[in-house]
Image 1 (cartoon, rainbow, N blue to C red):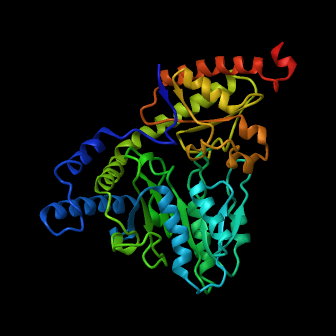
Image 2 (image 1 turned 135 degrees about the vertical axis):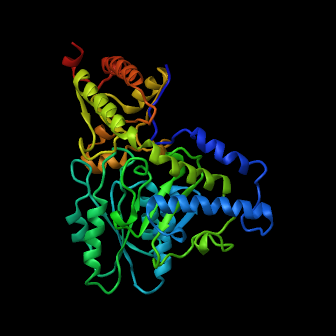
Image 3 (image 1 turned 90 degrees about the vertical axis):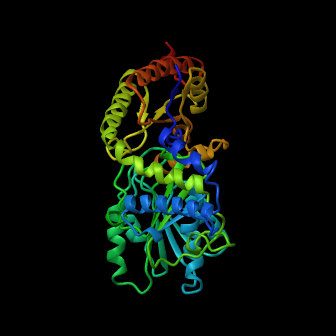
Length: 397
């Protein structure tokens, strides 16, 4: 049996999405900036996708900017805002968290190194939740941006984005310079409310390959009036926010994937029940295992476990041999031997960071697949603990 439980890394392209993009890889290949019929057909397709996404986010169509993915969208939101503010604030201050995706963290670190911004990195609590009061305490006169992810890509914790947004709006009532609010919502799109007015955000990132579109397409919601300067210069595409000929097939795919999300709503509760079944069985049937992150405030598709006394990479290799796909953390850091920055921030325990595995379920994951994974995991963990030098002797008795 082959079981894919790494949907947080990427998802398969949906059949309906493939069907929607094929014409734009064949006959409808025009450049959307061209005025002839091939160009007009491409432009109409881009406009339709933008309309679908704007409806989904409950925003204006001109507030949706297409990018090459979530990473570029995060860069445009953060670096673009700092460049857009210019010299209006001498040393702008950004507040983010220690558990953000590297697209946010490394962009902030780069701005810090370049002397363009001052950064505060908020530490999460023991459940991986960012406390609103900690953000409020960190606000300064020169604070211009707060960037907090909606759902953590490793441990699945759901952050109180709506409440953070409301707090920032209250703070802005008594400030000379506005604090903008950005959220990387890449892991939340399929599962949580995405209305930008409900979330009280100024900037919001989405990515196509997490929701059934191909890799290489994403979008950034930019609230009207937000001071954003382009970071890719060239033509005037995407309302001047992002130069370069639009990826028409990718944009069509993202628009179609977003349109299909409404048909997945009924599956979310079933997915959550299956995830809870998985968590319950693992914690009950395998000794010395702990759940990473919040039990309640987590994405319905995420299960992240700490297996004591063994390395996560060893578990992953054995899972792969059994035909099971999982992850030891973010797919974006899989080439690195460094332990998860998320787990280090939450638990301050390198062993826990090295011994943890992320399983992320998808809409088509079945109970029989989960049962197979549980059976395989029990055998793998028992085998690895017998040969692990970290396992206490009494564990092998």
